Image 1 (tube, rainbow, N blue to C red):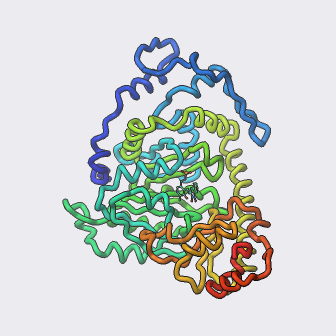
Image 2: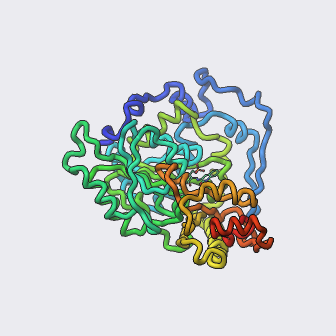
Length: 437
Ligand SMILES: Cc1ncc(COP(=O)(O)O)c(CNc2cc3ccccc3n(O)c2=O)c1O
C-alpha cells in the first residue's frame, strides 16, 4: 500500500514534537536518570494524595502516592504502554488481523489511545480528507461523523437493515475507472466510512458476506475503509460478526473502537487501530492538539483491565449485552403494541437504537421537536442523520439505552382531549409513545 497518497498536505507536513519525544524518552529511562529536560510540573506540588475506586465486582483500584504522581503527570501521546499493550492483545485475540505480522512500512497493525472514538474519527478524517474530496458512506449515519469531514463531498451508498449494499457501492464506483484512480487529479473516492454493527441511527448490522464484497471493492479502487465500531461489543448474538480488521490483508482498514458503551462514556477512552504509517500520523496530530488522553483515566482503566484479564473483560461484556438485549426486547415489544400499522422498523441485533419510519408523515422534525417535547418525550428526528439534513425525513431515532422498559411502554395516561384529537387527526400517531401525543 502507498499510504502517502491518502494523506492531506497538513498531515504529511506534521513532524514529531521534540519535546514530546524527550518526555517519552525520559519515561522509558531508568529512575536513576536525572532529567533537566522536560517542562513537566513537579507532582509534589499537586494537591492530590491518593485515590481508591470501588469496582462493582468488589475489586478496588488504588492509586498510592507513587501511582498518583504518575497518574497526574504527562504521558505518551500514543497512550500509556500498559493500556496499549492490553488492547493490542485483545485486538489480536478477537480479530486476528493479518497486518499484526506485517512490517511497519507494509501496514503493520498499530494502535493509539484517543479521547473517545470521536477524537479518533475527527483526527482520521483530518488526516485523510481534503476539501472537495469525494467520501463514501451509508446514510443515515452518525451525526458526529457528518460534522467531521468539513468541505468534502459526501456520497451516499444505499443501505438497508443489513448495512451497506455492495451492489449500490459498485454502482457508485462505476463512475470511475479503477485503473485510473492513481492518476494525478483523479476524483475517485479514497475513503469509505461505515458503522458495521448496531449502526447509529439505524441499528443495522452488516453481514459477513457484505463486508467481504465491500472489502474487495475497496481493494479494486484502492480505498481505505474507516470501520467505526463503537457497538461491536453490543452484538446481542454470538458468534460476533467478523470485522473488516479481521479480513484486512492489504492494511487498508482504520478501525475506531470505544469504551463508551461498555465501561464509561465520561472517561473518554477510545482507540484507533490501523496501519502503522497512518496511526503514527494520528499520534503526531495528538502531540500537536491534546498531547494525550488523560493519564489518570488511562491508568484507572488499565488497572481495571489487568485485574479482569480478557476473560473478565468479556464476562463484563456479557452482562452489558444481557442488559441491552432486554432493553431491545422491551422496545420491540412496545413498538409491536403501540406502533403496528402506524410505523415500520427492523429489530436491531446490536447497539442501542431503533430506527422508526412513521407512516403518513413527510418529516418528523416538527412532531418531535414540538409536539413530543410538549408531552415530555425526547427522540431524535431522522433528518439530523442524513447527508442533507434539510431534506424531509419520515424517521425518528429512539435510543433504548436509558429509559426503563416501563418508561418505554408508558401506558396512555390521559384520554383524548380536543387538542389531542386534532393532533391525532393531523398526524394519526396518538399511539406512538402514547404519553407524547
Ligand atoms: C457511530 C458512533 N461513532 C462514534 C461515536 C463517539 O463515541 P465516543 O467513543 O464516546 O467518542 C458515537 C457516539 N454516539 C453518540 C454519542 C452521544 C454523546 C452525547 C449525547 C448523545 C450522543 N448520541 O446520541 C450518540 O449517538 C457513535 O454512535
